[in-house]
Image (tube, rainbow, N blue to C red; front, side):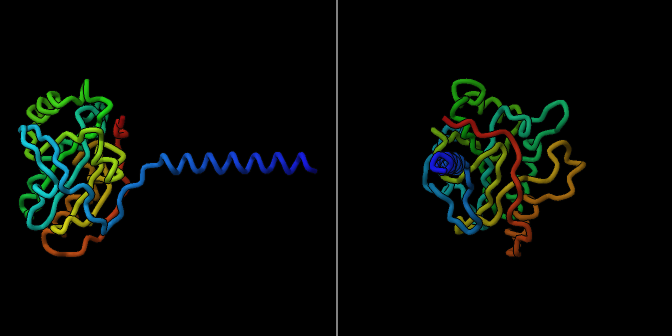
Length: 211
């Protein structure tokens, strides 16, 4: 009986430790209503300027998208169009509703390769990005936001309070197949001062390559 209790106790301890380790390592994003963390943290843009979220915030708010140069969910593949092909359309929607926009590259573990600053500049030029594209050194902003994928969307109001987070829309493979334009709708509602009916969706993409 004593041995049985000992085995049960050990098993309980192991399960508890495993659960603690899992929860400790799980990335949890900031909640709706949270103020943007590190809003004055300066990041180098492909233009060479050092800018912060506060600098980019406009009259009606700011759209932040964690992105990169390589993930198939961003750049596309043989079977999907990729979400970055909607970035410029998002930028135009932001401009129409007086909302700022920034793309953030937090792939610090790939900084000496495909996600280097030079490759960020080249990629942005090739894709004709209209929005700012900044480098998040040591993935500090991604960690503060709890951003987990590329892409991962965070939309803030003009007080830099989170009003929407998640995915751009419901179909990475093709714009023609999209039925729910979550981010576009959220920006439009924000710009018009209307309630955002869907403020949280599930983000999908490649994991952010942290150090």
